[in-house]
Length: 362
Image (cartoon, rainbow, N blue to C red; front, side):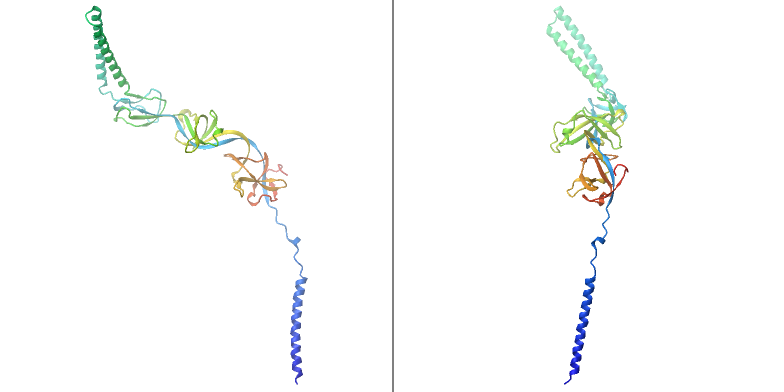
């Protein structure tokens, strides 16, 4: 019987098991002895820093701002009142004309001959009428002949007046004051009665027209003032002369006309303009348009500081815009507006404040 090999096999097995137990114990001892990381050791996140400006509300005019156009106060197409060939256009395009001034002439043709014939006919009929009256008084002629002679005389006089009127109409005169804006016919052209000859435009005053939406028309009053800004930056003040009593059925807007003085006719008509109509005085803050943002509900607003230096989103009501910025309402009369860093903070978040104007805040 071989006892030694069996004992050797048992000794090897025990040795392996012991080593395994020692390894497990060593690992377990290391894990258990390791201290968990301390929560207090983690650094706090930095507090965001923003720049803030203290804003005081100021009185400003609420404006209804619309796009429109300026039209001439008067625009007349002068037409021929007698037929003939144009022989003269004494006024150059762009020149000012006065009421009654001659702007074109039609050739006389046979009109002078017809005038002499009509004048002679009147003289002859006057002689016949006097002779008939004399004979009637002496009893040699009936009263009927006198009346016939008188009728013939009146017909001759009417013909003479017609010829004189026709001659007068060969001078085409300006019915209004203004500027000769266009010629429809030139020297040598034949014009019939009713044909257009020239166009006169009166640009002093101008007439600015806009279409006011139905929700704003109640704020616009006749005789009120309005500002008209032209494309070159010029601004003129005008007076509201007409407010339509009925809305356009297609657009539901009301036509408003504003009279704009234009001394010297320096501004042209037919151009686009921006019309600003003051409707009421309100308190508003002036801000940079870059500060305006949207909240999750799509409302326009800005970020301000409330309470203990916490960010708040506040809706705004845009009033008007000018070269200095955007005027908005809906804010408290005094408010701290975040001017730098607003894009990196959220409503409810605490912040550290840098003041744009030291001494106004803390």
